[in-house]
Structures are given as structure tokens and as C-alpha cells.
Length: 434
Image (cartoon, rainbow, N blue to C red; front, side, top):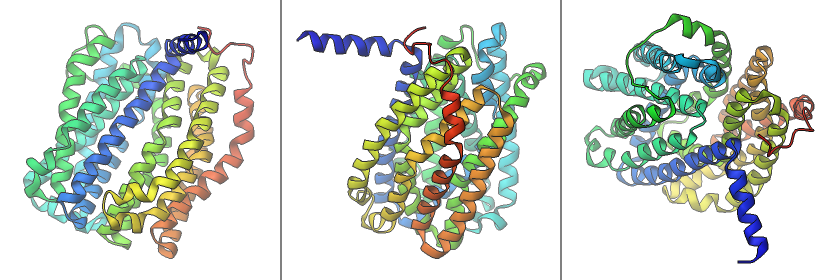
């Protein structure tokens, strides 16, 4: 091995020892692992279930995810931003957040089930069966609490456990819908996913969390003092996150009502791969949020390097997937490639301008600029939903991808200058210094 190779290895080791890059790596690895396993999972589902059943399964998962996103109240952001200052109350803070989230998820799940005839008539069978209704309630609670647990692990700068938890859940869910819940059809897909998530959550609570927060044990707790301490910041980010993720969960329902369950399945598969392609920027954004909360004085230098790495790594990945996309979608079935590829191409192209908007949100979260956070999220959501509905009716599925590209591109143009001004801060601080 020559001197140059040894120098490269040493540089990699030195970089990996830095928390910003170490945690970003594990977050990206988590997304990569869960995406690959998710890809395999949906190939299996597409082979063993009809397109209509897969469509029902994807809508149930989307509905559960939407309810979970409403239930978390942005408290995960509060955990990451305020955990460095929690001191001896870290365990009580974690359990308080988990308990409140579970209660809200149960309440909002009931509200959704009551409104099913108006929101999603195709899911009426869930409301008519008491066992399916209870299963939907419980597994939606699990989905919400799992999200908060990931935030807690990220706040503790221990993203490696997020990776292990996500990988465990993704492996466990592979056989469950086919071997255990096949008789439930599309609901079996949802149930298998939720049961696997529950198992991974228990492992995280009993084995991972105590290593990050010594003395931690899961127990129902509700400390009003701790919750109200982080609630104002959390609720602002809750509104922002709700606005930002609402289109992700609304579009499948919109497609179901406008185009039917088969088109929902085609959209979900293409969108799943697109989500995986955001592995690079999302990993750096989450790591930057945690590190910036611990060391705000180095935010500018960390932000510049994180954004540059995201763009430089995302661009070739997008180009490769533009070439391979049709072939990959074909693995789900010929109909998925035929109906989903045009959508997929537009979604891929939207990733590059989306990096700018995502990093600007992250910087504003660390700096607690609540007005800018809400303004950006609201503008993006209204534009995306409006364009998406119009283009869905005029261009079919591909219109949703075009809506993502237009909305992300326009937002990037608007925030480019203020983003650069923020990233110019603390230029004299070396990025590798601690």
C-alpha cells in the first residue's frame, strides 16, 4: 500500500470520527438499507398481491403516516434542539414526549376512522371490522412513537442506533404480509409493516436508548413542565413539518379518488424510490440540525460543507437513476414501469433544487426563525398541492412529478441569496476542528 493510499485512509478515519459526518453517514446508511429492503419488500408484495390490494396497502400506510405526522406535534424537533440543555431530565423528557405522542395518535386515528366515508370510501371495510379498526389504531400509535424514538437517538448523537432499528424493522416485515397476514389482502400489507415496526421499537427502547441515556426505561410519563418548555419551538416546526409532508400523504388519497387504486400503487412505488434518492441531503440535514444545536458557533462552516457534499453526491446519483429508473420500476411489474417512469423522472430532477430549500429550513430551525420556517413550508405546500391537483387531472401521474420540479425550482430561486448569506458566517472556523 503506497503513501497516498495510507493518507486517504487516515483522512477518511479522521473525517468519520467527527460527529457531523459520522451521524450523517449512519442516517444515510439507514435510508439506504431501509430503501433497498423496502424495494425488495414491495417487489414481494407486487408478486403476491393484486395491484388493487397493493394500492389499498399503500393508502393505509400513507394514511397511518399522515396521522402519525400530525400526532408528533413537532416534539422530535424539540428533542433535538433542546436535549443538550435537558441535563438530568433527559429520560423524563423522552418518556413524556413518547406518552403524549401515543395519546394524540390514538385520538387522531379515531377521528380519521370516523371520517373514512368522506375521506376514503375504499377503506370503509376497516371501519366495519372491529379487529381491523383496533389494529389500525394500535399500529398507527406505533408508527408515531417510532418517529419520536428516532429523533431522540439523533438528539443523542447516536444515529447508528437509528440504522440498526430501521434495518431490523425492514428485515422483519419482509415475510409477514405473505406468511402471516396474507388472508387480510391489502390490510395484511399494512399489518405486517406495523408489527415489524413494533418489534424494532421494543428493541430500541430496551437496548439502544439505555446506552444513549443511562438509566432510561420506557414508562408512561407526562411532565407538563418539560413539555411546555419545548412546545413553542416544537409546535412551530410541527406546523412546518405538517405543511411539508402533507402532500406526501394527500397525493395517494387524491390519486385513489381521481384515478383509482392501481394508479395509487404506481405512484407509491415511484415515490418510494425517489424518497430513497433523498438519502444524501436528508442525512446531512438531520446531522447538521443535531450538530448545530450542540455547537451553533460552527453552523456556517458545517452548513457549507454539508450542502456542498449533498449537491456533489446527489447530482451523479440522479443522473444514474435517470438511466436505470425504467429498469428498476420494471421489477415491480411491467405496468409499474409503463405508468410510473415519467413521474419518476420529474421527481428525480426535483431533488437538486430541493436540496437548497431543505438546508434553508434546517438553518432556520437551528436559529429559531419561526416566521421564516412557517412561510417557506406554507408557500411550498400550497404551491405543490395546487399544481399537483391541476397537473394530475391534465397530465395524469406524471403531472405530480412535474409539480414537484416546478415548486422546488421556484423555491430554490427565492431562497438562494438568504441561504448563501447564512452559510458565509464563521468562515474562519475550520470544518474539521472540534
